[in-house]
Image (cartoon, rainbow, N blue to C red; front, side, top):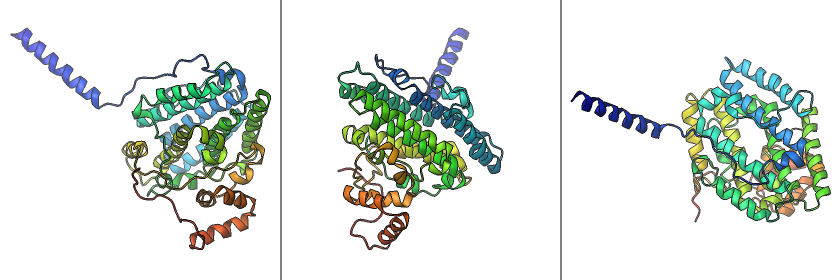
Length: 376
């Protein structure tokens, strides 16, 4: 009888253990879809690959320092001065760069523990980023569209870690009670994050160049322009770059992947607002609530048309990148022809045009999707 009771207790303990595990975050590691093209970017475009590795470190160290800071003043100093200077030195080759993209748990253990599912969604989508680069960097891959579809299908096998295939409303990033705190209090590193997004999108566009020599030149130009942003921080983007602006050819060819990348980038801003805004008391709970909202496939979808720009040469994109968020939002409501005319205006003329639209003087719909919309 004693043995039977002991087995019964052990059995109940195992049941409780597995039930508890079922409620816990899913923590196993998942790696790239196998392919001969994996890590081709490192071989073909080593400087671009080095920038991506530093970006991964910058993202991880950013969240870790925000969590560990003992006061907001300390956090601002650690991010706006110390970390910005560190990543700048790495980008410019003045400090040793990592050969590989490190596991985030090794750099940011506290950040990963705070919101494991958020970090895994970031990692999983960054894997897709990397595989897209690798497929286009490897000339042995003849059917690149087929390989990209296979990578996307593999990405979708982990729905808890994916971002939707349609662009979510900018309201999620700009219109919530905690929104805007990050970019207001950490403007320089916010610009650095937007520069990261720009380089990733510029790489997508450059890699579609069919001629290998022209492709190499475009990739080198993208890296050079990126470095200039850290040599002169005044060149850092003033709004979050989006795929239809920076990589219109890629967006037209792979709209679902482009939307996924835009959603990832906007969620980076959402997460930074959660971490930095003192009004958000329970960071983990709010991060998971926002992740759920972002991952809903048919709610809060963007309703603006997002007409793509023509492919603007990389070295001529500063005018676009220096537009303020309200100007970029206004452009999103314009036809392609209107956008190009808007870009050609002086800053004063653009501000006047935005004010006219705000006052209802334009002939186009105002605002963007602020309600919870369902796709028909």
